[in-house]
Image (cartoon, rainbow, N blue to C red):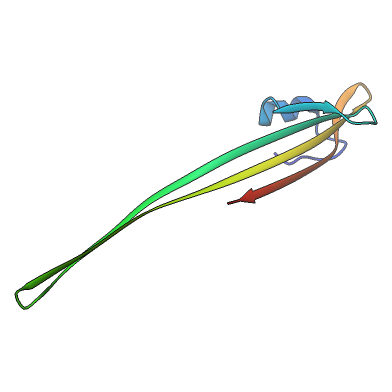
Length: 97
């Protein structure tokens, strides 16, 4: 879904994103919805090799674990336009660590 200012309705936002994590009102009386999504990705990797030199054997093994997290925040402001709550502004932020 693409959010469009003064076009996308609150009902369409709920249908696409579900219920917001936080609902507030700003000083102008506009509804402000905040969505926050977190994702954690874990990767386990191992690498092993074996080499023989003459009659001597050697092995090498390494294993690792990598984990990364990502957070995305979407803030949407709604205003009543002709009796329908409509998106008037939005912003998003993301961070990875």
